[in-house]
Length: 296
Image (cartoon, rainbow, N blue to C red; front, top):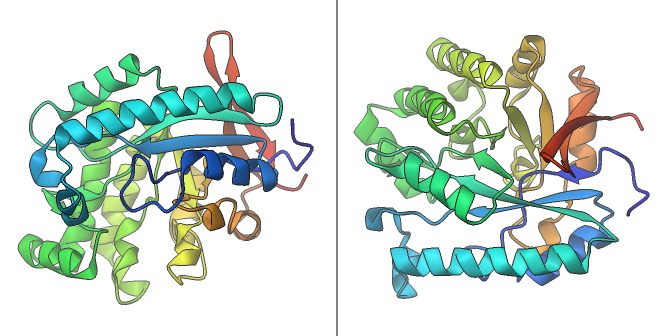
C-alpha cells in the first residue's frame, strides 16, 4: 500500500469514458493515475444509470444511447472495476461506489437500491443534479431554463437543498456530493447565500446529520475557477458545528483531474477549523468508517 499521508483519500470520483459520456479517459488509466498520485483509498463512484429516457443528455442521444445502453455500460464498468480491484490490491484500496441522482416521481429509489444490491455496491454518493425535473449543472442555458421555470435562482437553490434532503431521506447515501452545486452557474457567492437559501441549506444539513452522512469536499470547484472546493466556507463552518464529518472527492472525469486540488482542499478545511476527514476501509462486515488527521 501507499506510504502517503493518511488523508490522501477520495470517496467521490473515478468517472471513466466507458460508462460516462462526459469523461475523457478509461478506468484503467484513472486507476493508474490514482496509484501514481499516492492515493491510499480511492472510491470509484460512477454515475448510476438513469432509468428515465427524458433524463438522458443530448450527447447521449447523439451517441444512440438509451436507458438499456446505460444499464449495460454500468454493468460492464462494475466488472472492469472488480478486475482492477484485484490487480491493484497490493498498491491501493479501490472502493466500489455509485453516484446517484435525485429522486424523481416514480420508482427511482427502489431501482437504485436494487442496483446497489445486484452489483455489490459498497456505498452511495448522493448528488442532486436535477431539481423538479430540470438539470441544473449541465449547461448555463439549462440552468437558466430551470431558474426561470422555478421562479428565479433563489427559489431554484432553495428547492435544490430541499431535494437533497428528500434524497437523503429516501436513499440514505453515505456521502453527499458537491453540496452547494447551484454555485456553479451563479453570478457571485452572495447570490447563493441569501437568508432563504441559508435556511434551506441549514435545514438540510440537519437531515444529513441525522442520517450520519458525510459531506464531500469536492475539488471540482477549483476547476470551475471558484478558488475553493464545494461547499462554501459558511456551509463548512455550520456543518462542522453540527458534527457532520467531511471527506475528500476529486470528482475526477479525466486522468489530469485525479488528485488535483486535494492538498488545497486540505488547507481549506484546516483554515476553517476542521482537523480530520472521514474515509472507508473494507472489513469482514462491509465498510468500516474511520478518520484521518489532516495534519499528518
